[in-house]
Image (cartoon, rainbow, N blue to C red; front, top):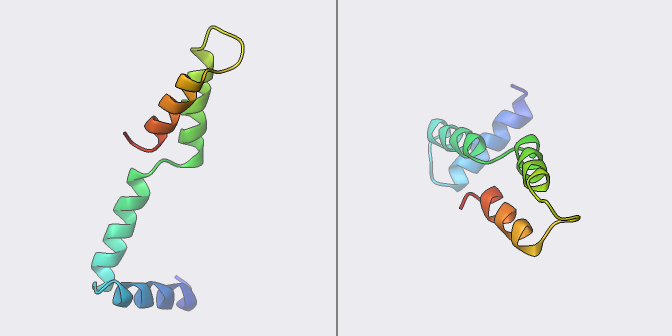
Length: 71
């Protein structure tokens, strides 16, 4: 790991009042639980494919946004 990156992680861990190990573990877990761009696009494409009418309804957009936000 580049030294500047390691230093940034150490600084952020200190600011969060956590050990470097705890901080890194938390960031890894958060990263995996969040959706990446490819997953978000797949969800939107599925919503578009399941819509019979031309275009997309407001309800579909709102449902997709809720799903992307995890709830």
